[in-house]
Image 1 (cartoon, each protein chain N blue to C red):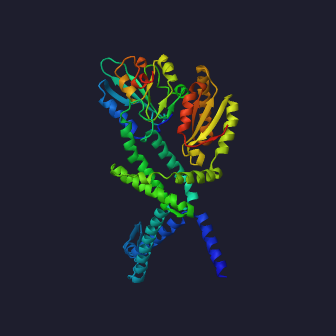
Image 2 (cartoon, chains in turn yellow, brown):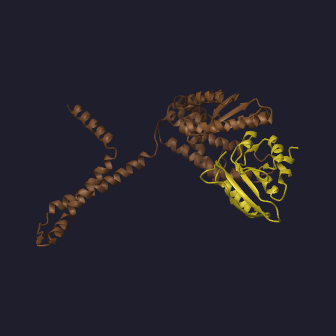
Image 3 (cartoon, one colour):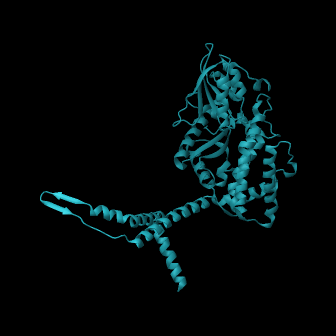
Length: 130
Length: 325
């Protein structure tokens, strides 16, 4: 876990959050000195709850990574597989959903931002493999 | 006799530099200050000659005078000019020495290898024949590839070209692959500027990659810390009661180039989620201990039995590994 993301990736995400129809505001909540991650707090409109997003720099997100996730990530959070070439094991999805946590790639996040119980939302990237 | 004098001179110079590592700066600064002093001493004398001190009944008048000594002024000016020239010369030399030079391609291989690996990773994951975007969801993948060609591959290629241009000697059998990589780098850059430009005749020369991989593997054996990490891991996993099936080292640590982290892959036999969760906690402790010991982050990718498929996929994307357990 860390901030080993190409500089254009956080910029791309922040720009997308800026333009998203359901996002009222967003801010970085990771501590620049103490933490090693990109973590965002996203406030949404239409009485939708806030979402904490962890932009992971892993090439492949594993169960171990999930169990070592930053302390800010709890119920209602979203784990973003931020590298476009990265992947995640679908075994995590069910486990995370029990904790009311979502996991997915960029498009999954964009879709999840529209939904209150986003951990039950099935993004296109997972619909295709079913 | 003259040899002895030269050796004595060198020995004295070495001794001086050992005792006084900042000797050049001090010498030039002293020259500059002395020059300024010689140039300005007339002013000092004039100032001193005008001093009058009154203390109670005591009255002192300093009445120094000096005629202008043109020789001192010339010497002072020469000293200032010389010191300025020496400062400039030293700056030029340090700029030249900051460009690393290599005697042979074998010496340069350890610098080239991580850059090549990074390009390979980007190409495998984003390149035209990669499986990125296979889900069809990420339409920006193609844009990312186009962007990464310019922002990552071209700058990396320029680094490789820079290293090759600062390598003094090539063996006969190295000349052809080196020329071909240089042509490839130039053709690829032209192609990025103008996508209609065909560079199929200047594809990446695999024989250059083979050469660099061979040299860097040989050279890194002498320079890397694989054995240190191996013994530390073996000792510590038994302490924390972790029972991995296999552990591999990969990435920059293979070439002794690890600056911030050490990458490892661990395969475990865990089949239960609770077991994986316990292992995750232990691995976190292991990473913390590693950081304390080596000052480096241990980037440990753990694959349980439940993630066997992902393990195979990941292995396919890693350019080189060394089994350490």
